[in-house]
Amino acid sequence: MEKNYSNYDLDNLDVQILSILMEDASIPYTEIAKKLIVSGGTIHVRMKKMEELGIIHGSNLIINPQKVGFDITAFLGIYLEKGSQYADAVAQLKNIKEVVELHYCTGQYSMFAKIVCRDTAHLRKVLNEDIQGLKGIQRTETIISLEESIKRQITL
Image 1 (tube, rainbow, N blue to C red):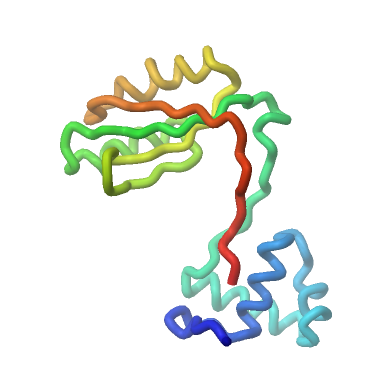
Image 2 (cartoon, one colour):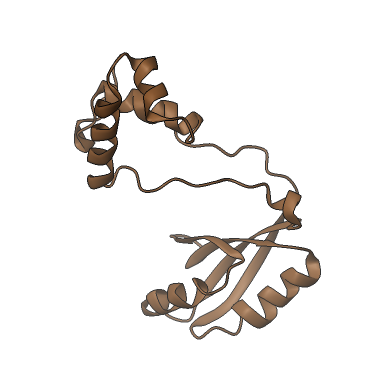
């Protein structure tokens, strides 16, 4: 059964291009073109179209935080004093480099963050001095990750 991507103006070639790049974002367009039996220009035009549509944006180099001295990953449930303070809280949290993901969410927390630190002393500093003192943040709850078992992109 073929999947319907019409909401995003994707066709089968677009899906194939994205699938290849999701496996290895460093693969040259010419190599993708050879695999899909199209021209390199076609791949370039398709990628530009998908960028313009907002389907893709940029590419990232993924490092292993532990290999560069960041041994603690924690998740932080953040309670805001008022929901109207969300935008201000986001602006403040963007300035804390250890915050690597931030989500506005339903349920128990107003926001949910992923933070990466060198060790427990660094985590304590980030929590006590950097995050909990921010205007609008009422309190936080921390969950320390012992192991990341699955990390992947969606499958098209």
